[in-house]
Image 1 (cartoon, helix red, strand yellow):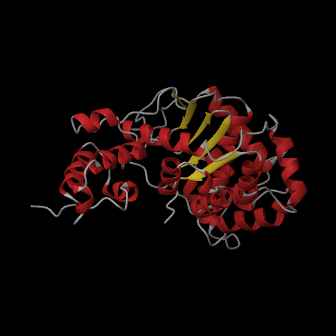
Image 2 (cartoon, rainbow, N blue to C red):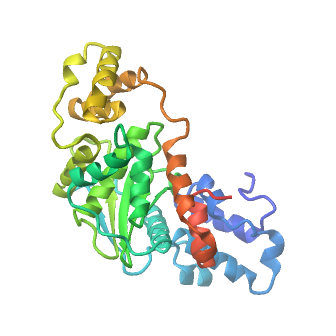
Image 3 (tube, rainbow, N blue to C red):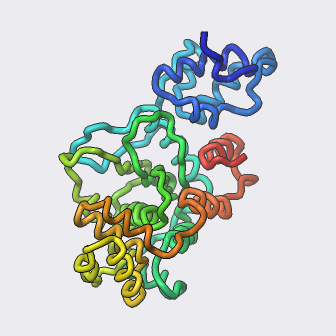
Length: 339
């Protein structure tokens, strides 16, 4: 007989965890969201079991009524949310548990700031504003601070309910508040900056309406059609990070990864563009990601912190947990891995 996933935490919790694992939830995710105070003793307290189940249900997006009456685990998104997907043809859409959890976290993050300020539709205009404060190029950290200055909440949620792929990021809008949730694991700031700029493009170009969640999907297939909105958001991101007037000066240096890296470093400053972004732009256009990844290794040292940690450290600077209702604070804290 296998070891109980939550030793000394109560029979009810372990039985519930097994049911959740059987429908795809991972143990790593459950360890993150189960309340610390759920214990064998707590299960014995009058009325505590219903409270424990309701708390877990709210955190991960389960139908609480069904959970309390029958014990069944049914993922359900908060009422009123409409999901839009980036792919015109889905080969593997996000799982129901993932959609439900993202709906919960998105709505919770939408409660942590004032209504979002209007941002320009022009990527060049935002780029110009950022470069007035930055003397070299647009990068992840100033882009994050721009978002929060405009009351656009940005967080990195590393642990999804299931192991199945299907989503890289999402943009949502609740009660006039825009929210961006990044889920892709990356060790390269330039990749994270591109995905953030892409999501910002969805907001600037009015792709996301009230109570809508726009999901950018991850796909292994070359046959998945890309919508016009995705194409426009990609163009917005490229213009924001590199400028709309930049011309290809890098492809002629693709004899070796080192020759490209050297050329990009020497010329990127004149264009006020991150050398890593130039190499990743080459990768997207050529499809030669192996060459690009090799070239990235010849660039000067990248930031020590992972993009996910940078994203959430800036989020925590802007979130006052003491001002949030307890249930919302707990959802946000769990999603951001706050102890």
